[in-house]
Amino acid sequence: MKHEIQTKTGRLPFTQILRAIDTAVAAVIQRSRGVTDSHRFVDVALKIKVHDTNLSRRTPPGNTTIPKLIIQKPSAWPALNPNFAVRGNNGSELLLPCAVSLLDPDSHDALFSYSNFPASVPRTWSERVYYYENQDDLNYGEIHSSFARLLKAGYEESQLAEDMLAILSGTKPDTEYKPGELAFLTGTVALMFGMEASRFPSALLINLLLLDLIQHGKRYGRTGTKGFSFTTAFHRVTGSGEALHWDNGKPSTRLTDTVEHYWYGGKYPYAVHGTGSGNMSMREQMAQGTEGERYRLNFLTLPQRHAVPRREVALVIHWVESNLSDEQLGDLTYRSLYDLLFARLGVGYLESTDKVFDLRENPRKGTGTHRPEVKDEDINDEVFWYSLGKYYHVNPSCKLLPGYDKSKNDILFASEYALPGWALETLEIPHTSNSLTQYIAIKSLSTEDLRSRYINHFGNSTWNNLRQDWYHGKKTLKPNEKENLTKEVQKRVDGLSSDRIDTHVANLQRAIDKLKSAGSLLIQRGVPVKGPFETAELAEKTACLSCVPQKHKELVGAYRKKLEKEVT
Image (cartoon, rainbow, N blue to C red):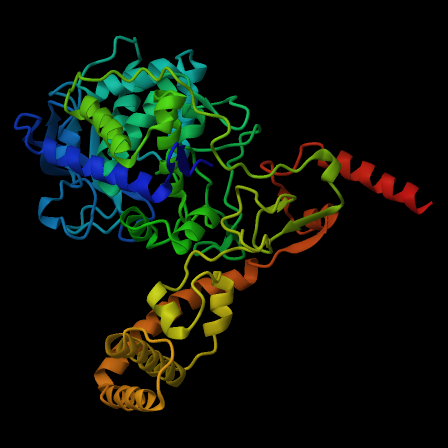
């Protein structure tokens, strides 16, 4: 994984790369809103599929009059961002449901709606894109399969990417597609640049970069042999066609005695699953902050939780390396990175012709951190697995593990949730602690314990603040100075109102409850089971094709024979 750019003067860490993405996107959104003829609306009566009250099945369509958005320039997408997704503060500007025409004003290329339609208020994350040819709401696995069919039919990866960029600009591709094929590509453009970009505005940039990398046939990986492709962009499957899953099973909420696993997803940062609530607020904190230990540990050790920013940053670095020579990379600064990204946005949305992005360079092989590979000679009889997991593993850094503690090189699952910094300070828990340590520290705390911890923290912080204000950080205090400080601190502690204490205790309790909820799962699957691979198979675990060699059984057999010879 690539998470930083080395330069002559140092490095650009992931926090600065995320900030450059967000700042450039915000600038193009502002510019695009000044374009007056990028789109227009008309009313149209359409039949829209609706769901029953339990959202368990679709019922026959209902007639309704909705706005139809006619895209006239690509700047319409950033200009209308984020109004194709429920964001909590854009209810009056929300454009759901809405028909969309990208190529022909008389056509309906996509339908933006929501899963609980016809309810008047859509729920958060309920947005849906229906490919209007037959009103299919495709998931990313189905989108992956549709691209696979196009490639099997003989279409080239580079042509598909080039044609999608043409559709974005409002130009019908010259490639002769069947009606259903063109409808699929057009609907996918609407999904990526409309719906996903409204959920994640950074997608306005990332979409362009991904299509660039596919169009120009760029390759990546430690050997430079993996190609950016539609076959791996939205979904990952094994050679036999089985979907890759994160190895973090949870009891099904729909089926009894069933464990469900989230899909691993693809290179496209928004085709991810199971990241958990609050992950985007942490992404915003990362982009606005500096690379501290907390952000670095989060980013590097929780690959599922932070799949979106991790995959965004990696794509940006691949694309930047494909555009710049070694000398230009060495001279790169935050400002020049921003300028480069904004220039690509300008070409994509503002029809700028100042710069051509032909990606003459290539992603560098040695600029990322690669998971250590397990060598054939290191294979022995021992594997590890999780009680609710799907696979057995040989590599503690396997990419399908949702988290691990790199600082201790332990094979443990890191929780999807950790206590916020202010809570760690109040409870006197180290900021660098993993979520298992935090869970153990708080699982038995009572309300009175929390009150005591808060009052104690208030007294300590008051002491430190007063010492700095009164004595300017003086290292050794005289007895009378200590006495004065002690009296003032006690006075302020005694002056704490019950309401203030209760408010802080309630906030602490909410944070703790969230960690307890995650921690209960953490305890179940956090410490792996170790044993011979036959035992793992008896536990109904299958070999993880991301870290277990295909000839694993053969290698284990050779290892056992070697041990037998040594014994005799």
